[in-house]
Length: 456
View 1 (cartoon, rainbow, N blue to C red):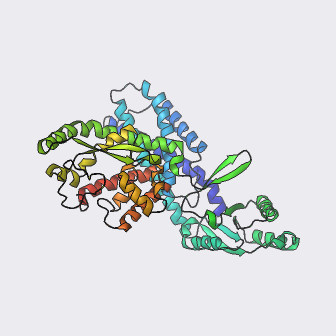
View 2: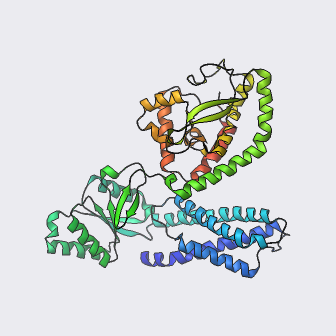
View 3: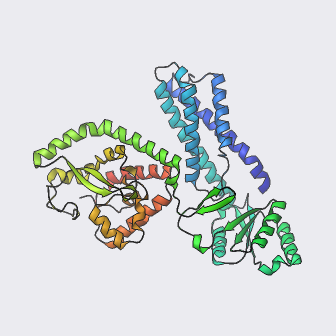
């Protein structure tokens, strides 16, 4: 059953995926036209689009899921496929689709494709995990060589039944077995008898022994995976680069080092910020500016230097919420701070004072989501207090961030608060995904509506 399932799953997945595209096109047609009247692409174009989607899905191997993959990885794969598909639709069909509402049609189609395909793919992934956790579609695995990391991996297999990896035990091969043909033969026969599917090699540095294990695995269609030693068991995802025939491990690569990921995040930033600028800042800036001027003398905007990506200094924009003073850079705002004006108190409690930072996003100094930037003096203090603090500047700072939606916002009263902020910022940088950004944005709106405790 375990082998047969993997043989049929790719085809079942692709057919299901195509069915979701058909449903999205039909729903878009019915929503944008007369009730239950089809006004989408004609049959020939429709079939071409189905074929295009199938080709994209197959070429990008969207049906290939690692047993340990998270929904975020599946979601990111879907986004890339959707961008390719919608680009082809926009180029090939939209110019010849003679309808006054064609842009609205395209927008609705894009949204429905995203929602329906996301539910299907993530739902299928979760159902498959549940299926494996009940003992189906499993893979037999052994660990060759004993060591602390191998024990940790075996512990993961026992806890995470949803990975569908059945751990059979350890095989402690010492270097003497390289010359002991009978010993190696016994090991190979035992592996075949137990129907081993995966061999994990743990801290074996004898080149001849590793080669014999891989050659044996190739002959018997067994996958081989090498467990990195303790020095490479870091809190980050390792990736590989190929230099000719030589592979090297990239130990500190982050998701936003990928050009497509950066492009996707930037498109989201620009689109979101443009919408805010056009529909909100266009009237909010004159209105708030007038109220600020009526209450106190000074500029409408408070411009403060802060550290950005790669520690590059930029001018961060805010609505001025305090009377002009000499301590704005060095002294945090506290509860009932006498420097805060009446209109400033309202702006700070509603976070409206941060709204001009959407202009910083358009200028490319900031992102919608990322580590919050601190003032230059505060940054120097935190850098001396916290190891690796500067690593939070590997990406652009954000208007909101993971630390803020987890409750770490406002005044920093205790050292644990900045340490917790840093840990959450570091986790975000190492595990960025477009889905995580969307989750943080949704959570931010929730916090703005319901949790104003630390905003002053």
